[in-house]
Length: 62
Image 1 (cartoon, rainbow, N blue to C red):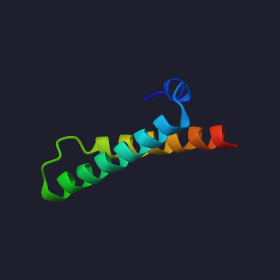
Image 2 (cartoon, rainbow, N blue to C red; image 1 turned 30 degrees about the vertical axis):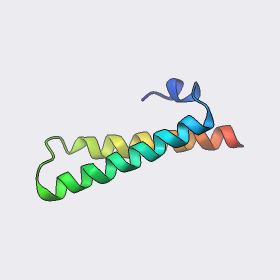
Image 3 (cartoon, helix red, strand yellow; image 1 turned 180 degrees about the horizontal axis):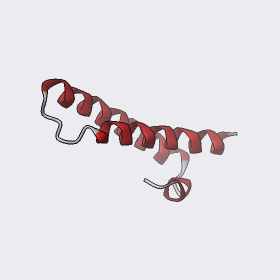
Image 4 (cartoon, rainbow, N blue to C red; image 1 turned 90 degrees about the horizontal axis):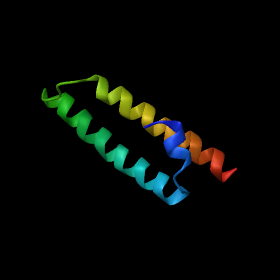
């Protein structure tokens, strides 16, 4: 998800996206532990997306 797309969202939508990505990250970590994760790079990308969302959320609230 690109920063320009995130900036178009309102605060509630951003919070919902963060919650969804946290759940997805949990599932990815679980899959990684049991050896079913095909692309381990998805974990890093999901973390970056969460950080990007939180950064823009912080910009909007201040």
